[in-house]
Length: 313
Image 1 (cartoon, helix red, strand yellow):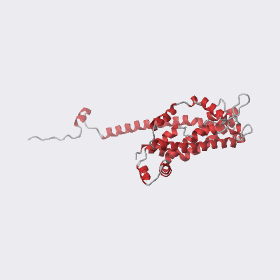
Image 2: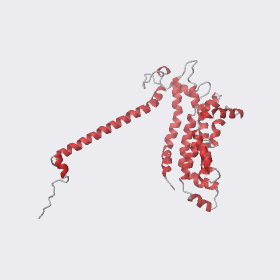
Image 3: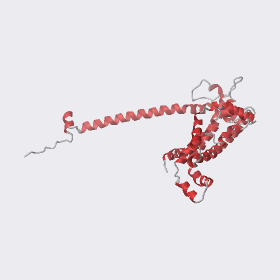
Image 4: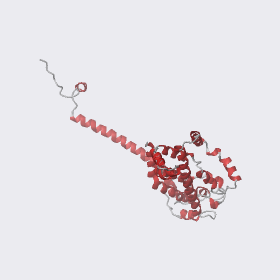
């Protein structure tokens, strides 16, 4: 009669190769070594993140501390500390430069940014509805041409645009800076909204059309409420890009009382006299605050807008 002998441990081959079953002490030592290796990797990973965070935040912290330093301690000094911190630079920045106050520069930036947001959201959403929901001859061709403009460098069209606006007598006005926003010339925002709208179920349009609604009613009552994440995301980018725009105002605006904040910052650097770098840093901090506050208030909508891009109707 054959007897089946059960091995005293589950993996007999491994036990034979190892010279016997693993003892409790060996298991404990192996687990402790694994924990130590994991702890070392975790410490190294977090140390690298801390170093990277310091590198990324250092310029902003340096700008903030430099706004509290005298101008003589800013150039050629990368230190964050000073023995002569004061708020004099902010007082100088608020008084303005060249007879124009800070609040004039600030107001010009607000006007350009707010009108840019309004123009982008209105024109891009209407254009996106046409590309995504209306079948018309040449739709795909026009959409491809619009996407192709994203590959066209802005510098290529600077001279033709300037000549055109100069002939129309619109140089030294805000019109050249805002016309493209209201004419859906910002292809990035149109593309963003088209992709968002294509993910919305067409059954909504069909149900509204069966109830007698036209394109205007469908767009206003159905599409716009559902496009809220895409609209807010576009508004955030339009606001930030307009607020930080330097080249456009530099080309088209000639009067100092029409300058936005990015151009006003340049006025503090004068090659023919003494430059006030302290006041420049103070105004840079003041110019950064609205963008930072705007982003903090609406950042969750960016995440929501990106997350909904993966949803299908």
